[in-house]
Image 1: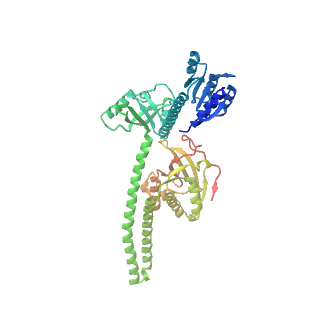
Image 2: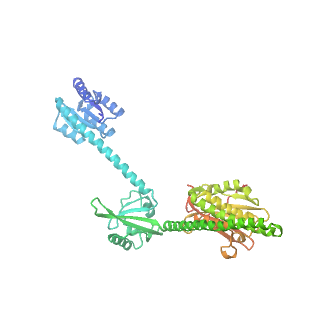
Image 3: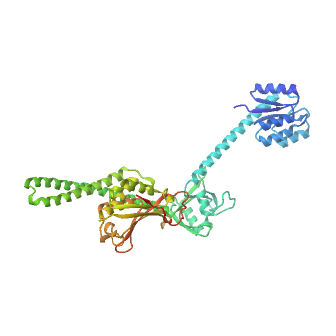
Length: 504
């Protein structure tokens, strides 16, 4: 162990010289003072873990130095030496908290024994400090871990008294940080005793006690629909010492189930697209080959128009199989990510604007919404918006201006939704292009539009044709938000339209 810095205060110079020499032989870093004023100056300027103080000094008393030393360096190990010992001095020194007491004259062996005791004590103190520091870091780590989850986590006794709550639980129940008040979880749940007693009995029977629907009573008097899950808390001997309870939003579970179902559906569609592409491509290739042979065999002549018509249909079938194959490849080959939809649309329209020659775009996106992120894949969204604008472009006989506006709104599940509204500067009948939500069988959309709707649905998006009249309509896209910007509060209402429009 590294020897600590030591303060030696002794007014007798021969003794102080001998003590200093002895201490340095034991590798202590000694700083010497012969009076109280010098000693006070040294202890204010240095850090000491050990001090040897004479009790009687020319300008003061050793206990006065000790009292000041304890204020500045409370962990310092202190040895008092004196030649005028009395019961009163000894009792006072011990009451003040002095660690060791030596009476002059003392032998070298006696002094070394005290030093050995001091070193052992300092080592134990240092180990204690290290263990305490390690314990605090471990405690802080697990607190950070528990506070990092959205789930409300509580530890309760078997009488349902709350022993611990994480940050999410504290905020949910309206509890104060570091509160010493006794709280019982049953007071916060509708039919709390009945619910928690049922949870306890289920755990006793070894059954899974999870996702039990409850109503939570908040401090504001509101009732929140939650799912409750419980586990027994065991001590080191395996004895049941309480219960661990987690509270989760029902909306989160419903969204998780919806996401799983949605992914299974898209997986089925991808497999179907692959099979269809293969099954259609083979006969189409045969028809195309036979057509070429037939043309060579009988010549074009009066059958030229028939050959051209058949070839156009074969090419159309080939284009459909290419779309199906590309849909499968890109969906299986790319990785989901998070991105700014508004930034994506801005870049996509700049790079692909010439592709849609009949459309002029105006983007009316509020700047504060540009950093909102969606969970998805930009390659998929590039395909989907390509299908969307291509379908519009092909249906137009003359150019049109499309204005894209953006809003932040709330869904029924209280999850923020980013909405894109697409409107035209003249009447357009979107029903003939995209079909009607009210009557899907009235007009079937083409393959590209169908693939677009599948891609958007895969990421929880809604594609809505809002019909104003029989001649005009508005397209509306809605996507669940993955991450809001700090300034966008979750409860914010639909944003106002931006006055600044960006033209391309």
